[in-house]
Length: 258
Length: 327
View 1 (cartoon, rainbow over the protein chains, first blue to last red):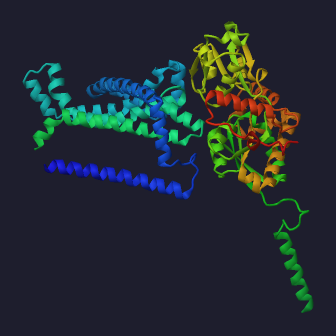
View 2: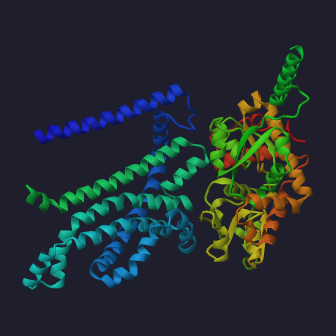
View 3: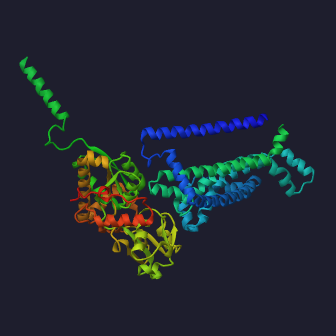
């Protein structure tokens, strides 16, 4: 019962905070008389939202971006986990690959996104790859850190119990590295949306990034706001999904903590 | 004592005269108005008339200190619309689109007479006629901006629809995708992509949109407030720019030399190609008289934009442009 009332209070504060922000925004744009192509009123953004929901535009473009994000996330995660495992386990691999990986992170994704369009064509693959590239590094780093943080004694214990390599991975390394790995996933999931949207900015005729471009091209700033808020919601949704996953997968850790 | 007083008075008169240069109407303008001018694209030899006007002192003579701003075209339009900036260089289609959204901008000088968009293919594709485009993969930056407007206007004029071609949004990578045969046809600027591709040894077929439809092209915009409250500034800005255009047309080699100061890396690029780019762009901006935009080109533009759904409502074109400042 106590938990329930705490939850209600939290939601109440959230609603109040959002409403307060919207009222301030409406008052500011009304009294400052800023033209709507510079800073639209919340009511104008709302009207635009209703239109793009009604004609199916928002759903169509959101689904495209979501598709790119999901595949990008899967690709980035898979690559980061495999390479991260190799880096954590082999000093030779680490020495060979680390300079490339670190250097690759200093390349602005916006600069290489046009090249990806040339190499992979204007379709969905270039956007999946920009998303995967941006996801890769934080997940990789956390995978390596997570695996390296497994206490040496636990490896000795597994060895004394004559655990197979698979058992060592499944029973020891995955559970031990999971909290740190999921921390990386939280960042990666949010970044994956940015990656896909950057890809869409560069060359696309579908997706939320494209919708932002259309809004800018038509001086329809309300449409830009609608697309940006949808991008934020998508990122928050993914972030929330990782938190949910974290709560499910790490429930044993909390129980032990209690 | 009296002599001393006279000397003092003379000294004060001299000093006052030296400090206040703008005293009479006959004096040249000494206080410069700083103008930040969004160009809509990166530093490029195509802007040689502006560079020439600065270097030859045309802006300074007209009391203007010009600063080039290479931000996005739409940002320039929005800033002029919000009266944050006085002027911007924009493509013609931006004016009706922006005015339909309530931006009080006015086109005050035509720079290009012909709409610069072209449809380009390798000769082996054998696209000689607009109808040969049916079923072809046509790449352009995206369904926005001058490339898209030009393509749609062209398709409409030759009786085709967007669904008759396979449109591909590739960002600003048209040269690369045509070279790599990723797309069969690209849409670009007559003074850019065809010259770059020809320099790389490709034989091309180029179809000019302006051969099929007259559309308003690149020019200078201001806002209604500046036009109403400071027409003298508009007049000075337009006249200096037109002088630069005229000078560049008459002295292309010298205008090209001015570009080295503004276009970073020009000295290391293929200068023959860059000079060709300048000459090709000059073919576009020989308006007669200089600065004049044709009313029928505005009508065509509005019609095309309405058909494309890029404008929610028709605008009063009389308010969108003026030829008052053309030579």
